[in-house]
Amino acid sequence: MRLLWVSAGLTSLGLGTLGIFLPLLPTVPFLLLAAFCFARSSERLHHWLVTHPVLGPPIQDWQRSGAISIKGKRMATVSMLAVFGFSVGMELRPAILAVQAAVLCATSIFIWTRPSA
Image (cartoon, rainbow, N blue to C red; front, side, top):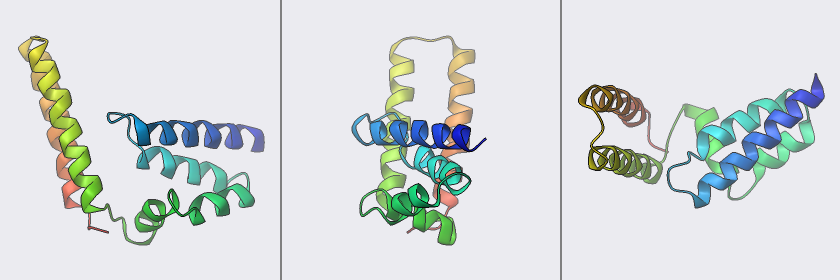
């Protein structure tokens, strides 16, 4: 079971790291998932991730108070608007756009109602 948790943590860490460079791939949710997996499998990896100078602060903010940085909130909002704009530009069916708009609005509400780090 420990190997499964480590594998899931490393996969999440890899996706989170890619999210730093790919604007539409979320970073922090994957880092939180990696920290969760490492906490169940490897104290050394968990400690390394949580205390990492670049990757650690968003995890610590979330664990401490459920906070998201203002920069993170803005980046997430801009990304969601870009994706929705791309969908409109592709002339997707109105039903699909409506579902996408509802999900993106709900996600934005969640993000902006979290405390700021």
